[in-house]
Image: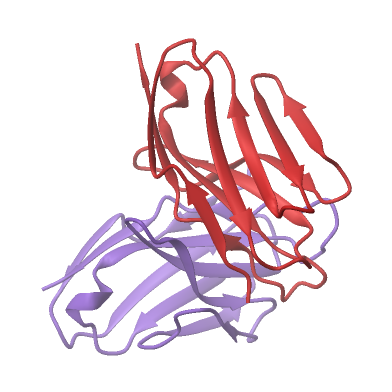
Length: 114
Length: 115
């Protein structure tokens, strides 16, 4: 089955700097890669996703890149702000049917220091 | 706004007790999920349901069961709680299609402590 690894497990950056979180997956059939952000005391929330037919996707200060050949994808946050502090989860799934599971990485705890 | 609610934010139970965790969603989602979240392990799928009265085992179903009698409600049951089931439990829901609506919507979680 699918296995998703995520690095680093913790990340501290100064406000205004960039943050990068990297993930690798094992199942070449995976074609959908969402990223979730979990703020303290809340459930995870989708912030951006990418499909395998796209190499990069941007949404304001957030971007995700995908390298299907190498089976890795990354989240890039530019101009970080204190409200970006949270736990971030990458995930992968083939999403061929409703029964396909989403496999989550172990998470990265991001701290943005003011 | 999609809303997924969980019956309790914090729960303390004793070893051997039967525990019910309830989840309700208000967006008419077909699929519902139960995850447990542990430090360094991410979100691990316990069970999911793709329709009323339907259920599928996830990656760690041992010690758990589920019930989906109504579309909006998905219950997680610990038949005999054990200390290794102390964890954060997250419920999620989504539409069934594998098209554009792939987003899972999560509840706020239930922090369960088994003594």
